[in-house]
Length: 161
View 1 (tube, helix red, strand yellow):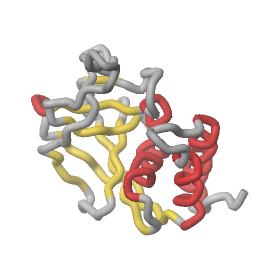
View 2 (cartoon, helix red, strand yellow; view 1 turned 180 degrees about the horizontal axis):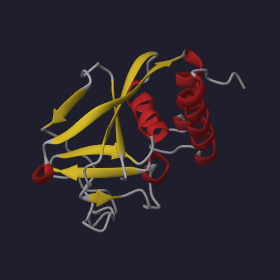
View 3 (cartoon, helix red, strand yellow; view 1 turned 30 degrees about the horizontal axis):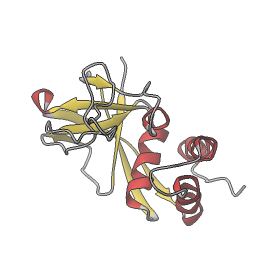
View 4 (cartoon, helix red, strand yellow; view 1 turned 45 degrees about the vertical axis):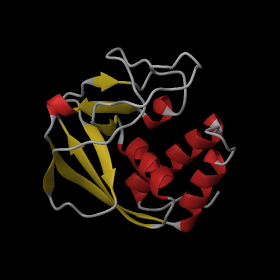
């Protein structure tokens, strides 16, 4: 069974149902970004729940979003997403291994996968990798952080270097 991962900042218990989503970048059913005539990315009018294909990618996305140390909660689901944008060549969708569940597929059930303590060094590394401004980031830097987060999930320790 293929599983997908979502990271939260609050403990949702051993399992929970996610019944509402947010509005993100608009993507086609084929996973391509929808752009305006000016080349800007459209905002979706369809509520979606974002997930990742790996726990470290979900954790990376949550740290990048929250920008804080502390406890993060990882959940998994065996539900099939509506859109897979993990192959998109723009933005950080590939690094985040992003998939989305659209409103018509909600609610989606999630089961607790792991609880992770995120140290200051992890947050600092994410900030440096994403700190190029105006939506720019270091692909190499983000990949290195993601590898370190995978080690955290396996060993409980974030590498110092």
